[in-house]
Image (cartoon, rainbow, N blue to C red; front, side, top):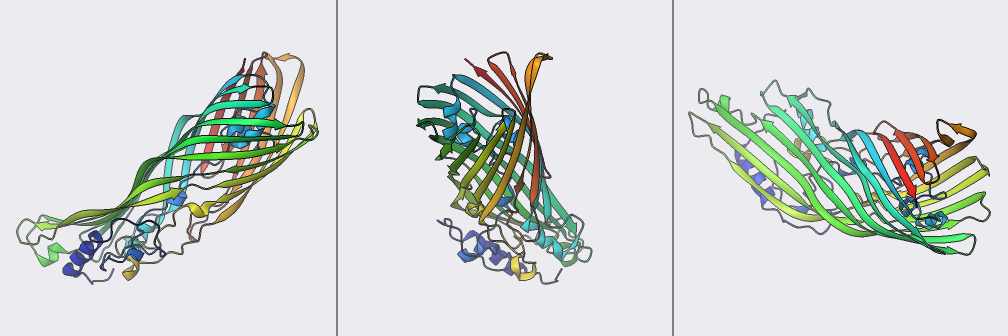
Length: 460
């Protein structure tokens, strides 16, 4: 680390940060984070935040059967989760029903933490700028009530797209100056929705459907950079200890907001053998608060070395979740086989762009990361289902459906230094008990997320 440590300039820098404008309607055009050593009164140097785009927002349809088919469900859409997968598919349902889906998810998400770039000025002892979020939880992912009529089907539903709650930290120590560096990031995000859906059959071949839902995003994310011992008080004021010497810059993004979102779907089923589906899903925009904070304290018991500063500024901003356009085709070569393909066009460009520098030293002495421009990505889903029909019940089962599939998850974390491209493999089982109860199990395996969904459907 450089020996340049002017205390007056440090104080002016933090003061400049706190005097910066407190509200910005849109993200600044640059992604350079605030330099602690410079007067931070230019709005182009204010986007100090963690990697929001690394959060694994679940864009799959919520059902166990859909998951078993690798998410290739837009052209199938033959259960209550069609309200999300393709609302037009609800016309396939002929009896009133209720369903419940429970999802257990294990997260292991690698992400690029721009805060940790400052640690490269030191003898880093941690994993560099690559951090990890880990979490495991069980949630009710979908509840629904479906009521079909002669040509129209209506449904009410609740959806939980999942929750991730975790913290990550990186520490390093400089042996020359005795400074200790700490970068920490945390995230707590959950998305829920209450919706109403309807579908209408247009003749024998076409169906249309739409869902309107009140979506809620509860989002809390924070990133902090701290350095301890920066002022070298023990050298400037020998024998005046104990010493307290800390400088911390932080950014917290938090909010609990609602938006009215919608899905629109079309299903074409000309002969019962081949079907095609087209769906557009609106992700929604949610207002959050971005708080940029600065904390600086220095003291020693035996001398006048106080240099304290504590304050913050806030601005309002928006987080827009990806819109998704899906097109799928399904083929039933026999009564017991189903093959399905779906292609999604996901607009990740609506997510906030990450910072290219660390909070403390910015581009003054620190390194600058290559920030990729987020945009639209193509996601491919494939799935297959084989149903075994038993002449006599086996363990009380008259049939057993076995499903398997896969889909890709393109790199969209926003940083060139980390490749988060991932392939998800899925497996599923399904059966019917008696005449009214349907049970399904779906499982997902990948580097970032492992999940199991269990569902039960009761037909009246």
